[in-house]
Length: 145
Image (tube, rainbow, N blue to C red):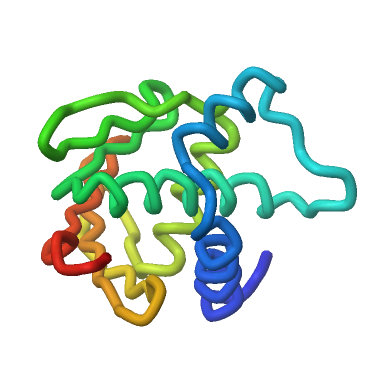
């Protein structure tokens, strides 16, 4: 299992790698291809990439919140509410486990902060866990371009 700092760094690197793509298009194409891992990737690379694309989509859409559940998928709340392509449950579950590790969330409920660098700005995502549902609030996202 990777270290806390390592997981956070790897998530940030995935976000940096995906900055120039359209997250919805990439997620839709990945879903059509069956959510396969790229050859040579480790166990955590796929969940980290999925998390990065989900976060980038919400940020680009200036969403204020998204909900993530391994069985339901990801719902984004902004000017409109929509659901992103749902990765297999094991990918989402591992992504949420990594997110909980990064933010220090333990137990059935809790709240933590995920700090991200996006382009030349920083952003704090407030992560709330309530049983199996994870709510990611993105205050101030409208100021990130």
